[in-house]
Image 1 (cartoon, helix red, strand yellow):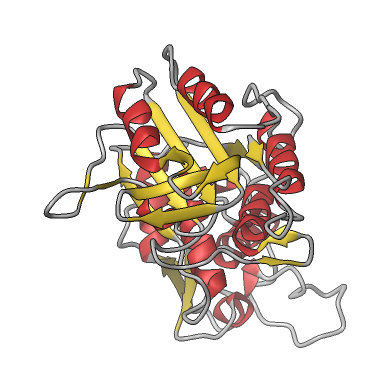
Image 2 (cartoon, one colour):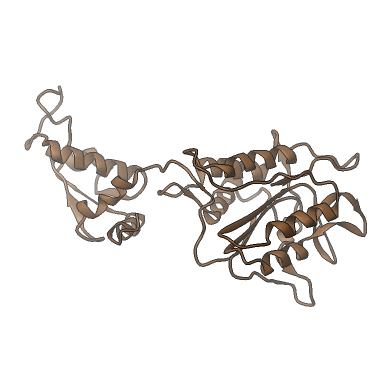
Length: 316
C-alpha cells in the first residue's frame, strides 16, 4: 500500500498517505476480524525505492498480489508514470509499462493494481505505432480516471479512494458478502455518475477473487432455502392469508381464513427476506403481504434464479 504526499513544494498532496493507510487497514482483515492480506506500507522516497518494492511485491507465487498506489501520475509520449518525489521532466518516476511487465511476468494467480493518480488509465497501454492494451492471464487494473484525466481529492480522501473504502466496507459486496474487483468497479463507476472523472477497469481473469469478506445482506441459510421453496427456477410459490402472521385473532385487524399457520409464517418471512435483496417478487401485487392476504403468488427474479442454481449445486 503506497501513498505519497511529500512531493516538492507546489506539488504536495494531502490525502494519499492517509488513503493508503485506510485501505491497508481494511484489507488486513475481513469484517469479522479474520486475517486477510499481509500488508506492507513502505515510505517511498525515490524512483528506485518504489520500483524495488513493486518488483518485490510481484515476485514469488500465491493467490493474490495487490498494489495500491495513491500519488501523482503523469503521461507523456513514452507512456504513463507513477510519479516519485525525486522526479524530473525526463525521468518522472516508475513507468506504468514497467509495472505492467512486473505483473505480466509474475507467477501469482491474481495480479491486481489499483491506482489513484492522474492519467492512471494509461496503465496497461503498450506504446507502439498502434496503442494496444496487453493483459496477461490473471491481471486486473483499476484506475481512478482515464489516461487523459485528473484524479481529484475531496473531504480528506481522493474521490476514487473514498468510494473504494465504502465499497470495501460492504457497499460493493455481493449477496455472499464477497467484495471482488468487478463488484468494486461497478460500485465506484455507478457512484461517480456520468459527469465525474471516469474510472477505468481492465482485466483478464476467468473468476474474480474475493478481496475482502463482509457480513452478507442475507445469510447463506436463507439463500439456500430457495430450493426448498421453489421446485425449479420457473416455479411460482402460491400464498394465502395463512402465511401472514398478523392474520391472527390476537391481532386487531381484518382476518381471513385460513388463519396463520406457524410453518407458513416462517416461509413468508424467508420469502420477504429474499424479496428485500431482489431475489423474489410478488406476482401482480405490490407487497408480499398483499400477495399472502389475497392468495396471490410470488416468483424468483433472474438474480434469484441464479442463486437458486448455486444453492442447487451446493455452491452456497
